[in-house]
Image 1 (cartoon, one colour):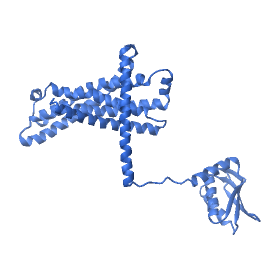
Image 2: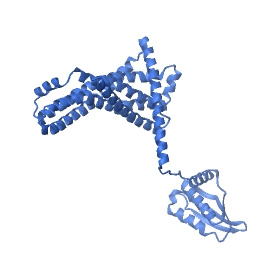
Image 3: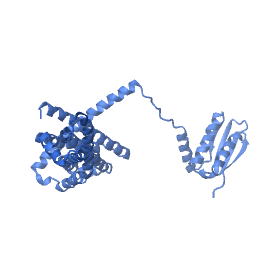
Image 4: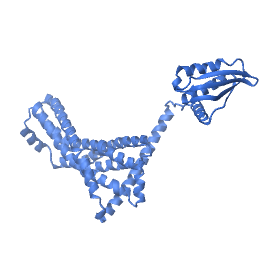
Length: 377
């Protein structure tokens, strides 16, 4: 058990000599603070003070901070204070305590119109840089794909099927559940609104067209972006943090061919399959609600659905799926390779991957909607 902190004062011709002894540690508690206050009161008009630490038995960061704070308090009163007799380990603690106490806090800048415009401009330039990087990344990926197609033995079938199972098979239950519920909600709202116009049967048309053309593929893409896209970014980012990407390069293996191509190709194959399952689930949910809530029998629902939709309605959703999968895979890979060496960077890039993927999926869906409307398909 350490001795309690103590202080003795001797007046010398050169000034007051404050001899500190005992244990100056956090365990002393309030005694440490009272002893430090006594240090300030023992100075009787002296213009100089020597704080002697040669008799201190123990010191930690708390004691060093109290001593440095007392020294600064003496100097603020016009007393020249000097620490003497400190052992090397105590000197390190005092230097660190002094550095932390004199460290100036970061200036908090309040948002202004200029800073707001600067942030907008920075975001625009960042979006442009992301677009350029994405196009360049796509070019490299297409080049590697052509090379692998020429030499099929280089294709990594095991990795492709593993990721296809991860994206499609393991992701199917949640996508089926979400689309079933959304289909049920659309049917309920459609029946509720159209019943006022005695147009309840048109709920089937609404469900069929909306689900097959838009909702099925859009919800599946958003779920894939949040589930699989984030996983790709996290995996690539973690490998980059552990320098496994550099190890592949040293082994004369292209990381894009080994890591990215199987994942992107698995996404391109998985999303159309998930879109098909999502369409079936949403139609099933809509049919159940139409039967229970709108008194539309399943046979009538199916017959009306066959009259309302055609093959082109079903094809529109499936055509979008591979392109959305490609965009999700590219963004996830680019963000994964952008991870630096910290966990904060990994979290930031994973978040950016999901947000950018969902945004681009919605933009791409809008572009396809305008295109199909223009060609009347």
